[in-house]
Structure formats: structure tokens, C-alpha cells
Image 1: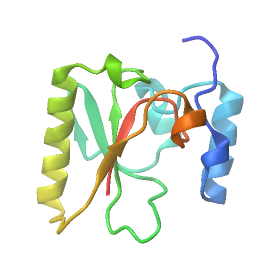
Image 2: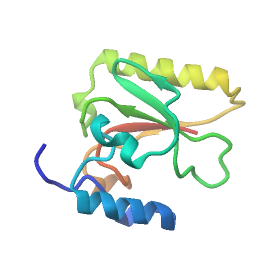
Image 3: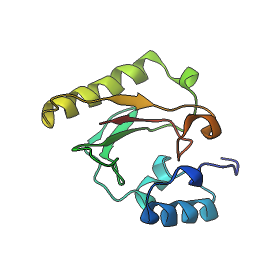
Length: 130
């Protein structure tokens, strides 16, 4: 993969995250591509599907009981790159977490495209369940 900006350090929320993100920038790799993922992300992978992995967020949002990331196993950045099967599997992961962790309510979202406009810290497509 060509060298590009995979990280938006402006959206970092905590010091530990900033240090790791700055290292990722130096390394010049996408931290959410599977060959790099466990080098930077230290939370367990709870579910490993054909298209997505599900893991707790390393830096959960403040005041959340549960914060999960579903990370695409292929490097994509835009929603138009998703297939129907991608969405089906993503929903299965979220339904599993909802049942397993007994969410009384929550939210899920996905940022896509240019990080300058979407507030994300990693360009690689991922979804969040809170």
C-alpha cells in the first residue's frame, strides 16, 4: 500500500493514544490493516468474521459502559466500497455484542471518507458500537 495519511492526530483524545498514533505516523502504516492491527491495538479480538473483527475500543468514550470497534478486514475508506454481505456480517457482530453484554440501549455509527471532514482518527473503515 502506498504511503499516505492513515492517522488524524488532531482527533486524538488521550495522551497514551497520541503517543501510539504518533508512532503509527512514523511507521507509515495503516494501524487497522490486519497485518498491523495487533501491533498497536492491545484489546482482545472478541469475534473474528470473514469480513470484520470485533474488539473493545482501546480508548473508550467517556461515560460509556461498553465501546466496541468493528474493523473491516480489508482496507477500505468509503462506504461505497462496502458490499451487502459486509453490512450483514457487521450487523451480526453488533447483534451478538448487544445480546452478550445486555445493552439496555446504545448507538452505532461509522465515519467514512476524508478524515478532515468526518472527525475520525483512523482512515480505515470501522464502525463503533456504544
